[in-house]
Image (cartoon, rainbow, N blue to C red; front, top):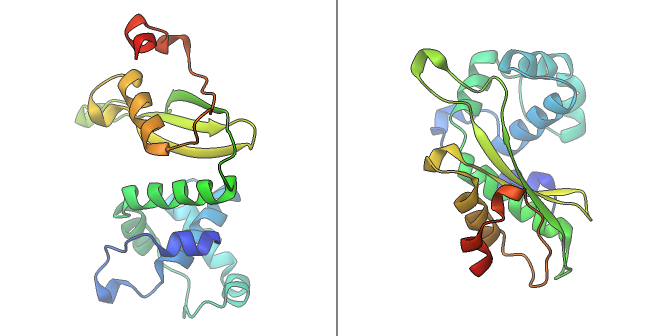
Length: 183
């Protein structure tokens, strides 16, 4: 299973006329741009434009030209986020292999600059599961969407990951409560 196969499994919500650029390759090139330091839609567009001929040849793209900034913005803004997360979780499971016992660490982080005071939106708080013995991100979820704290979100994420029995989890002291220990 390759990263392009995973990206190809993500549902494409664009209309037929908006699918000039196939989603799997578009996302793959966007990831490459981010790995090279692109942080905005404009920077992703600059990366695609500057490296267009190399990418077209290397990836055997049928694109006639690099995508414009507005197309990049529209595609990334309307991306099927649950489908993307599901695809990456499947890819992580594939990389883990069989039923090997893993040692995931769960930790929550508030993303700097993700708040919007003008519209009254709080900063985005994510909970991530990281496999320490394989150095692999297993999944993440948004804590703020449930209007709750990390504890129930962590329990839900552990259940969703479906890791083998015997896996050893590490979490912050926040999760050491009598009710949780009884469960």
